[in-house]
Image 1 (cartoon, rainbow, N blue to C red):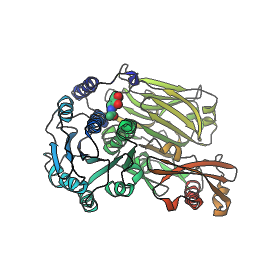
Image 2 (image 1 turned 60 degrees about the vertical axis):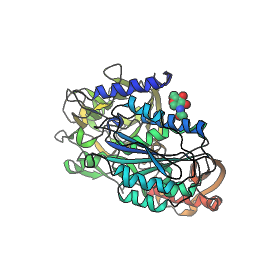
Image 3 (image 1 turned 135 degrees about the horizontal axis):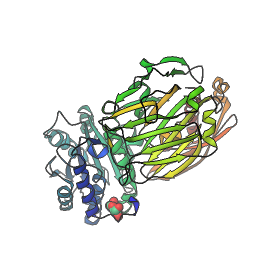
Image 4 (image 1 turned 90 degrees about the vertical axis):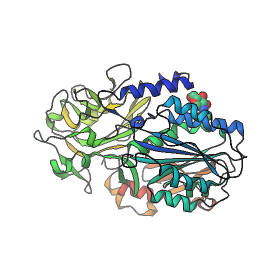
Length: 501
Ligand SMILES: *[C@@H]1O[C@H](CO)[C@@H](O)[C@H](O)[C@H]1NC(C)=O
């Protein structure tokens, strides 16, 4: 298991070389093969100090290890700044991770004041601008790491960056940082683009979130509108052209539309068109469906990604005979790996009614849910990037091209694993009865249960009674004024949107 590796610079090097090798021959794609221009803008002012500056460098090396560094895929530049910015590593100078790691390691600490705005402007006007592959690059990303308040204005430089299509992440370290400044540096929404670490010693703790977010940015360019928020992900009903290929029918609730697939419907698309950059390392697969007649007795792939040679790259398989749900994914040691969810719960999926099946896939774990109830969670071996030169299909009998007739209302893949908590099965009648949607604010009672300060973010927890539901939700707020019981009224709106759309 990969978590047991003793990571050293060398294992990072090995990983990078094996990824380069994988690109030959068939085409695999994923985060590491994304075509990014990635610029790190690193605070080298006096407040950082030599020791912590070294930690920053190591952290940059760590978060870079998930990318394939080459002129085809990700190119990295590093700017260190204090009073003035210094271009330590120009974009695309190093081909290969080993060289890049050495170059980052040998950056010498600058010392001086903190002119963050100037450094960002330098990145926009000189570094991104100098990219040799302006027309091919898919994502222009900047990560600003700072531990203090900027002595110059950041707003104009950041507006300029956004105007040029550059996405900025702001990483604040320590307690000298100004939250409002990080928010104005970073893209919106702040909860995606602003990260905090208590100090440089604990910066490793935000490595996973940084990696996940950089990956999401690289592989999930599309957005789905969910309850007035934009979520990164893939709306497969649209992407797979289900809406145009199948007949529309009434869905699980009056407000919902669904599609009836018949034996003559063929939902097949080129993977390259659906997942041009492969699959993200973590994702949430959500399907709202109804199995009827023969479909509840057959074994079929509700969703599958096949290689050119018809080998499964990812699949969710339903087996009517023993009423199980199987998740298949790639493996770095075997051809594929499978997890079979086999408890009493999946059986209800076969009762002829609407249900929501959800899989939360993470690098080392997969969990499945039916109508918001956890079926089971299991561990996964490390996965290989998927081949994108095959096809992606919906509702196909396993091992064949025959379509299994099912009714389908929702088919999505979200890239943010946290969407698993937000995506409740509110469209399922048995979960939330429609009567709840004739509700009025007064039917929901929310109270502020607690608040705490974490990484300079005030975390407020509100607990709400909503008919027979009682649940608590925590969220971060940026300023004091909103930390009062009044904040919970905000949650009422979310509740109404969630349950009543
Ligand atoms: C880099 O990764 C290694 C191995 O996972 C870890 O021990 C180290 O603390 C990380 N360094 C930083 C500064 O994040």
